Length: 231
Image (tube, rainbow, N blue to C red; front, side):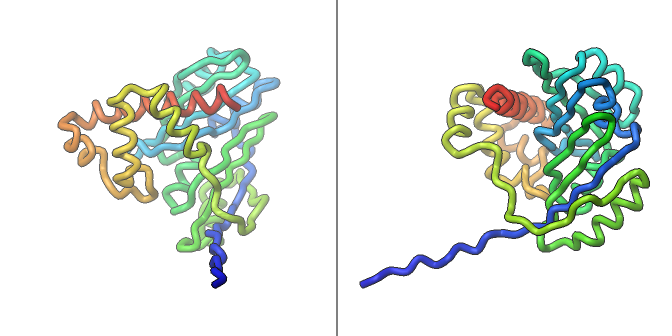
């Protein structure tokens, strides 16, 4: 008897990408420093209208990055870890950020880069959303933006393979951090939109939401730092 393997249907999304020129965007302003390269490594909702964006920034001094960020009331920056000529920075931003705007519109930010004083922002739009309408609203919200790319592609693959993720969870994280981030993931905390709130998660561990955020932030930073060390 012969067996047939059905062909798997690959999820398709619409990828939209924009160029940005205004230095009102902190990541664009930082990239104007000679030799600086700014790249988003992770984008995480924090609740109450704020988001944590983790940027890998090279070719510029830490003090310069923090000083430029302080000029923008919509961004609160701090250094997470330093690697030779590269640093991992966390920017806590509000809904004035282009990536946040796309996220709130139903897209998933995938690319945020700054080079030579200009920026690029790209996001995947799921089939359930209108990519054309989202692009138009983005251009209306950011007059300095230009749509540079719009195409269908397969859904992006995760940063981690299963084995490397499991190794990181067990080697780099404390037991408490592993429990909290695994439970958050399984409960849909990192889905878009979220399926569970931080308050509900905190109740499961009998801790305050503030303590839960501390555990999540510590675990997230360790995992992101690991990807930079292995890149």
